[in-house]
Image 1 (tube, one colour):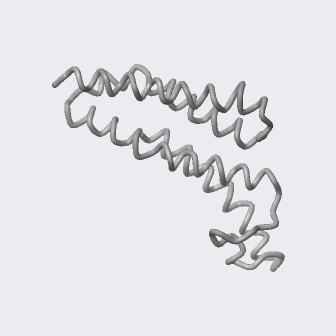
Image 2: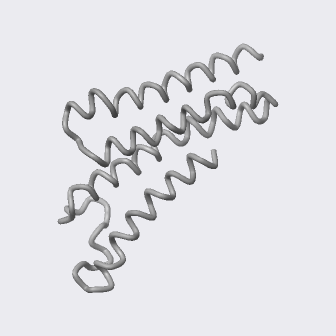
Length: 131
């Protein structure tokens, strides 16, 4: 959980590092990034925002499974693949930030996403077998 949270915080930090100089130099208003508003920004920043959103979308599922494992005193179920899960999460984010080209999506982003889904499915099945 700490690794996942740390990676998500790093993505937020990158967005902040991009935005603060723009606001302080008065090249952008502080409300320029209000949701639903069209933003004129570097394409990589739009992709970074997408990578961050992907992290937030996966977080509830991941956190729920890890919490259930902790409450059930079954951390051993998640511990073995936790590093692989985090690596796949980071890989998906990096692929998203690099490009949204269909080949990158097909050969990098989707496989990293699929690894996460398969690990979560494995963990859920293993946890359900405890009961």
